[in-house]
Length: 147
Image (cartoon, rainbow, N blue to C red):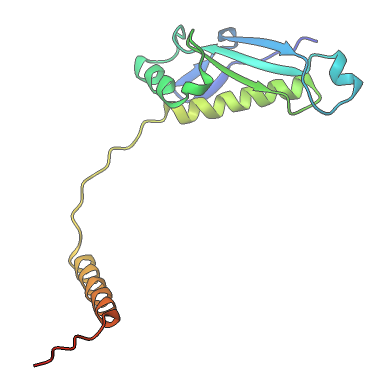
């Protein structure tokens, strides 16, 4: 069965053509009875991050850093699905997982802006510290040398 697939749109600036994907099909384990033993319903998607011409160098580095357990030595991102009894549904699942990973992996982290604490937050913190200190002082044994 041949499944027609469109290019995968990650965001407005990034579209991955379907020619960049390699799909492997295999017999999935689990429920499904005789059907599972006869039909290759499991799907594995291979996407070579290093050779991709659609990703910038920064995006490639970020993906390699974020998902080291899903990338093999050749720089291929491997995603597989055996959830469904249908090869088509597993293929769609793999594409959805791929899209989610790339969305997370290509988002730029916002730089943290340094801020100083407000007057009220400083006062609250000091008040809490004094209250905590007095509670701990009440736990102490009374001293016997009162002169």
